[in-house]
Image 1 (spheres, rainbow, N blue to C red):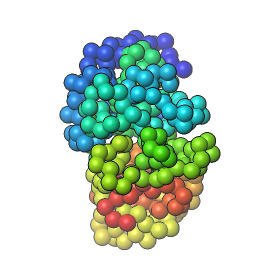
Image 2: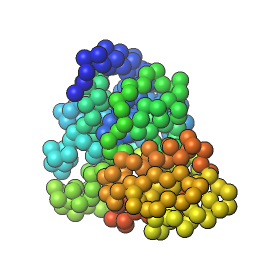
Image 3: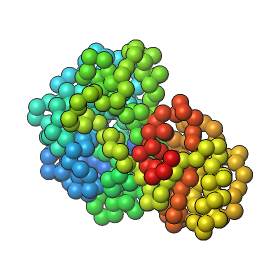
Length: 321
């Protein structure tokens, strides 16, 4: 529900987007840094603000499934099935791009990544803007994605024309990305919609980029990504032994572990329940807290192997496993 006092803010944000400016806004995954997707100069401002490599494509956010034709050639049958099940929501579909879509959006490739977000503030903004909005996460490139407006301010500062504060993002990690342009759909990035949920709708899918792929079709493919300033490592069990060792060595340690783990002297501990959704929602916020507290080292208790999206983010953020 959008409060009445927020309507003028959303209207102003929509005007900024249509005029080629940058607006950071909340989604159900993380905060996005939005620009008019059909305005090449505006999209280039995203890359400049983030320090993002031009080889890393961005996701286009739409207010409704019917608007896919503004950026893509078509929504194939398999994509339609998935849209009916998961949109609005945290699933991104890779489609054949329209020829007139700026190549800045797609890293020069033949496809475009598209989703319809579920967050009420994002949906209200997109409806008022009336344009497709290209929006990667609202942070400097390779850093931890933001899940609050304060995270955006600290990372991007005055590089953004406007930041809409919609509170913490409930999902906590980025969307799942599925390429539906291939003979069998291909999972390019795990996320809040699981592989099992997708396969329950359309049957078996492949995982990872196609062999010999020269141009990235999805964000989130870089080896070093989602990374805090402090060195992050993974540890078995609760991670207590490793934390104790680092603390004894005089390090300021941030520790993300299970809620039932015992405290370790000298460590900044954040406990989470043994629940995949709760872990995902807390992950980036915890990494931000550790960095803000001046932690030199971060230890994360290894989550269950079936939590593939969380493992993907931790693997790319870690300097030691």
